Image (tube, rainbow, N blue to C red):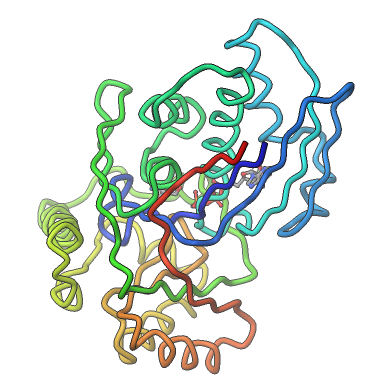
Length: 293
Ligand SMILES: Nc1ncnc2c1ncn2[C@@H]1O[C@H](COP(=O)(O)OP(=O)(O)OP(=O)(O)O)[C@@H](O)[C@H]1O
Ligand SMILES: N[C@@H](CCO)C(=O)O
């Protein structure tokens, strides 16, 4: 069995812990029943992941598989990772969503994607990466009494993401611990109105308005202080025609949204200006986690 899962960009600036979308940058995992457990890791951060005593995917897969079947079987796992770790591209959500889905498939227990999202919440307590990793597209997710409610919209093919990935990693847990716990009412209103506008723009496919309405007063400026170069990424991307330009998740990657006709000039300006960063143009993903038997 092969399972693939997309990278995701959460928050989209103001939509903290609420908005997210899926990018066509996928981890792929091959799993087969075996006499004993083997783990092969290729691609992004392979050496680091091999050096860890435990594999996050395998631990979650085994937990869920045992819960479903009551058995502890052995499997061979082959990971081909494309999503860089701790850069705000949802690497941990991709692992969680793929591991749970793989366990249901291997246990041959029927499931709906809603189930995967709600189980994933046990491992990552905010739903903005796990929802698009599971469903693809642009997702709005709300947590209420430990349950995720969500809506998804397909992202049209005339849009591209231009992402700028610094070498520096940012741990989500650490980054969250630096955020304020109280905010002035006017800042809250800025975020509520911007989040509503982004949602309306995606659902109505009226993207031009994004150029004027995306403001965040809750987390980005604070988080970007450890990498002030990111302020310049935003300035250049917007100058070159991006529709919006935000920190991806908790960083360090910057996410820029553009019409496909503007994507290349944004990409080349960012590449010229940030030679140490990995700049990519990506399609969006509208599928989410996918299994090939
Ligand atoms: N392919 C992988 N295999 C095993 N463990 C992984 C893999 N990818 C990520 N992880 C685990 O997830 C951790 C990164 O999670 P973290 O939440 O800090 O970053 P992120 O998910 O990439 O960023 P964000 O949540 O802001 O988008 C890694 O340190 C590692 O423990
Ligand atoms: N909403 C989360 C996304 C990162 O996983 C945050 O900003 O911390």
